[in-house]
Each structure stands twice: as C-alpha cells, then as structure tokens.
Length: 176
Length: 140
Image 1 (spheres, rainbow over the protein chains, first blue to last red):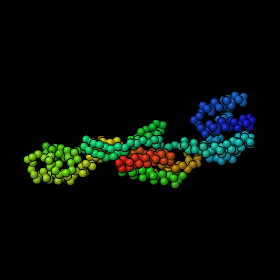
Image 2: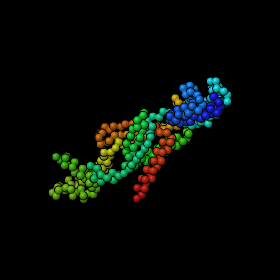
Image 3: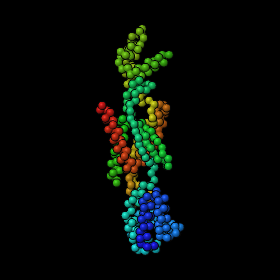
Image 4: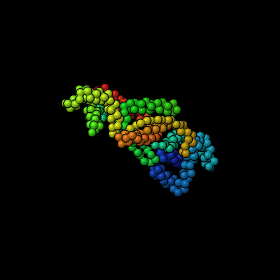
C-alpha cells in the first residue's frame, strides 16, 4: 500500500472513530477506497478491523502516541506509516477520549427539565387560596427508556433547591 | 348530631376564610345561647390559622418534593477508558405521592438522578429563569 493510499485510508478510519454513528458512510468510503485502489473489499475489511483494534485498545489503556507507534511497528507496519498513524492519533485523541467518556455509564441520567408555575385559586376545603406552586417535569433515562417524573415544589422549597444546586456547581467546578 | 354540626360549622368558616368575630357570630341562629356563641367563636378564631394551613398542606397535588440530598463523585475509569477524572453529581429526591391519597401513612419514594456538569449548568440556567419569572410576578 503506497503512502498516499495509506494516509487516505487513515483519514477514513479516524473520521469513523470520531463519529462512530456514521457507520454507513464509513462502509461506503471503504468500498470507494477499495475500488479506487483496486483492492478487494473483503481483505480490506479484515485489515481495517485489526487496525481499528489498536486505537480502541490505546484508549482503554491511555497510551501515548509513541506507544501507539511502537504497537503498530510491532504489528509489522513500516516506520513511516506507523509514525503517520501515531501523529493522527495524537491529533484525534482529545475527541476520541471525550467520546469514550461520554459513553461511560450514567445512572438515571437527567435528560431534560420543564417547568410551570402558577397560583392555586381554590380547593374543596378552602374557597380562596392564592398560593404559588411550582411544577417540575424531569425527563430521566432509565436504562434505554425515558421516564417522566412530575414534582411539585413550594416557593421556599424552590429557593433552597436552587441554593443547593448552586453549591453542587461550585463543588463540580472545583474538581474540574 | 352535635359533633356533626360543629364539624360543618368549622368547615364552613375555614372554607369561606372568615376571620372576623362578627362574621362568625352572624352564622349562629337568633336564639342561640349568648355565652356559648362567644365561647365557640373565640375557640374557632384561635384555631382558624392552623386549620387553614393543614387544609392547604393536604390539598390534592402532584407528587411533592419532600427532601433532597446530593453528592459529587469523580469517575476515574470505565470499561471504555482506563483513566479519567470526570466529576459528576448524584441527586437524590425524596418524593411524596399525593398527600390526600396517603392520609396518615405517607408514601415516600426516592429517586436518584445523575447529572453531568453540562446538564447541571443547563438546569441552573432554567432555575435562574424561574427565579427571575417569580420575582417579576411578585413585583407586579
């Protein structure tokens, strides 16, 4: 495989790694590459699969780009190509790391919040009430399903909730 | 019969929100015993605020927030990446189901929610907007 072909292939690979949802585009680009360079698609796919294992393993073990280069050379790739790949790796690793962190498991993740507030006008016990209520709707991801949770808060509760959340933010910021 | 009548009287007073002695006195029939009328009015007036508060507390409502707790964790590794330092927040909300339905045995459920820093920032923005809207309403 010539250097230009290799860099084109690497580009395709990294584009897929940074956007793992674009599977179809990746496969289309792979078959374009195969036809352009007169390589058959089957063996190319196998090679690509083994190449992809390296960045994924590197992420898991937090390898530096030198280590990635050493891995590739150990696999039998030429020095020039290994260096090129390692360079690309260094450039892309922040994005890839961010993606991996984003995939980390989250328990009951809060997805969305809606609210409304209003005044209770009357009830069956009290003819005129006039008290303010706040209703929150929290959309939570439980496993793969979304669940809506509705809560009502009084004004004092709202203010202490806001206060607590601001404390959380300060705490999170001190750890970033 | 006496208890039921008293009950009706107090319910009526609470419902209408009567706070003045004259209003309550006017509810009694003409030939009611004077001293008893005054005594009853005095007792009702003493209790009216706590009765109103209790009625308000046991109104039907959506599930209410009873308590909340939080903790901040730092995620250090996972199956997809072996070293990282990502702070995350766990928020536990204790929710009480409809008070009117539960009566004297409140049903409390705990919901634990995880928030990333971005989610928390967005949530705080939303809460800030609520606070601004509330003060706009209060100042009208």
